[in-house]
Amino acid sequence: MYLKVVVPRNPVLLIVVGAGVLTLVISVVYLHTLPANNTRSLLVYTSPTLYSLVSEYAEIFERDFNVEVHVSAGPTGALINRVEITRRGDILLTSDHVFMENAISRGLVEKGTVRVVSYIVPAIAVPRGNPHNISGILDLVEKPLKIGIADPEVAPFGRIAVEMLKRAGVYESVKDRLVVYGDVAQVARQLVLGQVDVAILPYIVKYWYPGEVDLVWLSPGEIRGLVSCQLVAIIVYSENRELAELFIEGFTAWLREKNSTLGLAASLEDLAELTPYTPSSLEFPEVCLGR
Image (cartoon, rainbow, N blue to C red):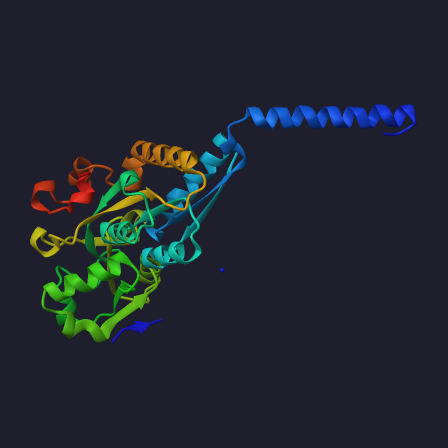
């Protein structure tokens, strides 16, 4: 059981009108010489883990290309359902490969446009200083702790958290102490506020709350098969495909430049520097390896 805590005769007037018409003609001609994308907008769907970064880059893109970028965030599963129902949107960013593969199978994104944004691994997140002395997943059974997770029905890391607990054989023992929130951003916030004692989250939450969140790393065996990657692709309903391509190209390049301060692993080499794991000790799905 889970707890689950929108034409004039007057010559002067003739001159004024003529000037106005001339200005209008010049404006129309000028607008037609501009790239069509300059009068368009983009709708970008993103997971909460990437929302702040997508929003930051969206401001840069708007300035550089004189377009509007609308960013909508939410649990990845809910976003995919929204795309399917509304048949609207240009770009989809997912928190893990499973949801992107789901979007591909449902014909919602162009498979050939899928690109890796970053690699992610789960960890046990604890308040600064690890006040409950958590050393591993078994401590979640032995100590009466409130455990925060994202909604496994729509949030990738909620699904990963449940799978991790089941694999370790402790799910039945802790399921009544799971506190479920809509997405990982909400879980992380509640951890910092002290509403939950620990949480199962992507390691990058440490960078969201520097100095407030510590991590307890799991063994490679405990997370093998549960590691993933954040992905981006163009939605099949996009009416601004060229603009969407420009956004994705620019966003991924911009992230690579900022990686050292973001904690995002844009490559497997970055992952080895940011976590205690080597790429060879983990198993990534083929879509995360560009195959």
